[in-house]
Length: 183
Image (cartoon, rainbow, N blue to C red; front, side, top):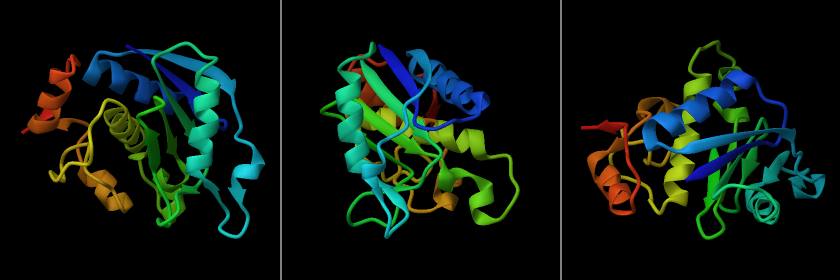
């Protein structure tokens, strides 16, 4: 299975490389990194909230995905986004259209006024989480599983960059070889 990692904004190469490496290591996926920045249209920006509407971005990505190679498309952007009913989202997936996005702004330690080295791993975990949704997984009740729902940065940090045995078993039933499993 080929995953295309695209950039919604300029992002450090090391961040994209870590996400690509995690997908290869944990799910055995081939990853194509698109070097072009595909800035989302400003019409998707909610000026009152100062955030992008993630559902609009996913619809736009689905149109782009039809003209791109790959089975799945995951876009990374150093922006803040939300969906109606939530204050923000770290990421968002549309399994029916094979597209997902991960929003880096709230994953950065600097967003919280602290220094830290967890940024690249946070992004990689959220990419792995959204790929899990694209592969048919829902949220997991195991708080250590990468598929657990994260409503705060502490919850992102707490979960592992790996699937629990139950989620890994579901993926295997769909023909996905899982290499990162927690007990």
